[in-house]
Image (cartoon, rainbow, N blue to C red):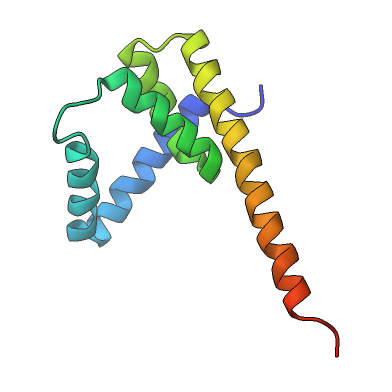
Length: 114
């Protein structure tokens, strides 16, 4: 096992509760953002959680992975669906690395040694 994700989620929630006491308005806004992020109802919970996990992977957010893996399981996401979503995240992240590599190369060229 790489990590105990169930324990990670518990620790994140406990730490979040401590932070909420220190900054209640910020946390209220964060909770509202998460609660209302599907305001028009066009996506079902399974699709939202698949997207959330793919984004969590590309942003390297372990807390997000723990939270959305739990929510995906509760929403009925299958391993096959998750594998497809994560495959898309992997392909996109490689594409982003390509795009930013081209930009870095261009920037390097613009700073031609004088």
